[in-house]
Image 1 (cartoon, rainbow, N blue to C red):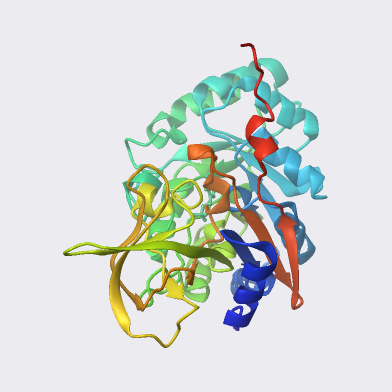
Image 2: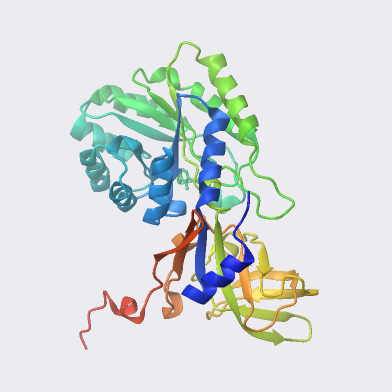
Length: 401
Ligand SMILES: *Cc1c(COP(=O)(O)O)cnc(C)c1O
């Protein structure tokens, strides 16, 4: 798989300025196809967890491939509709949301996974068996790249604890609810199939309680490589193991298996292109400050995430050690003691794996502009979001003094 060339990055920097997010459509398509063909089963449905990257063009690209979409807010649902998804292709896996959003989702005719006893009860009281609904369960399994992205363990806020399943059944019976799905999402950055298999076992213990079940939703969280030594989740092995498990237990059953990959589909397709503002030599560290900060790419500071960084202005320069830092008034270290080809002021640095939770988590902190987004599609380079301008900082402010 060919990644964008240095020439393309240089052209993008020249045409649109930096910092800028760049997405390679081919990579998104190939990741989707890899996922789909690994399962190659009509009972498997893929819902793109769009909170990873919601640019309308990305949503449309995945829709064209046949993907469904998983949303984490009612606004993402509206973006999905805007991008052309049909209601039956849209899933809203909620957590901790107000009941008004669940009502709105129901009125839009989309699939809903409810994640609390409280909202399930409200749903029952209001809608009885007039609308099927799924439940998000917490399997009490620890998994994920680190604690901040682990969502299935027994201290996590996500989902209805599996230990409260009797209460779910009581509510279902009391209101005659049509529970059509059970969902788990154990976390992000999970490489090993065993975590998914454990989750399936937890679900298999309870599915007999739900006579109207149509789908088992195993969430997302598939791993992608960040460091050169890492590997992504082996989809073929994972698919074989999961399908085998379903075949063993449910041979008569026509249950659908749903997945919600986010990072797996878009992370590696994204690059964050920045420029060196200043070099600062101290007695022990050489700092290279880029024209960005955690206002644009939060993952290194929030998750201690590793992002590969390449100096495309001097690809054959001597390797030296740098701390790559940002320009906002916080300690925003992107990489410490990192070996990179010799850096000069004005050089362009490319961050890899910036497609998922990159632009999406950006902010205007320090009153800086959110960056532009560019898509490379069929060798065509297109601006798909303008960078903010000064008006954007004032847009919603009301001056009363
Ligand atoms: C964030 C999220 C996903 C996607 O996780 P990735 O690690 O990006 O694959 C899937 N399902 C739910 C419910 C999520 O919150």
